[in-house]
Image 1 (cartoon, one colour):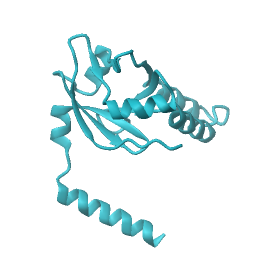
Image 2 (image 1 turned 45 degrees about the vertical axis):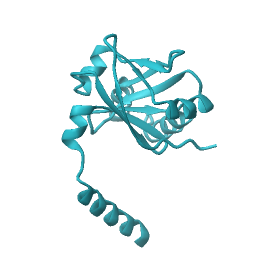
Image 3 (image 1 turned 90 degrees about the horizontal axis):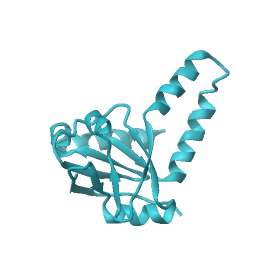
Length: 155
């Protein structure tokens, strides 16, 4: 059964770097894979991407298929660098994850305010202040969606 994550949820990280995963996300995750989740720093945006186990495994299989390490050296280097930013976080009994300081810094998390955003089969975690800076105006979002939907209708 497919799991979909939607919505925007604000949360606060405690002094130890722990943050509660939104309860609706936790319920979906527990149905999928239990007490741990794969997390990767996004390649283009300054956020963390959380993948349920099944989604991560499919993604990883596709990447490995495309980047045959025996094919050439660039593929191996690409795979090494891609995997270097992947972590597996345990979800504690209260539904929290612990974000190490290095990971907090990688997404410009300078205070304790974060935002979770559902993205269909995964969800992201942002510094609230950083997300507000890059947040797209609704009109631009509408225009972008219209262009992409029209493009996919023509294919």
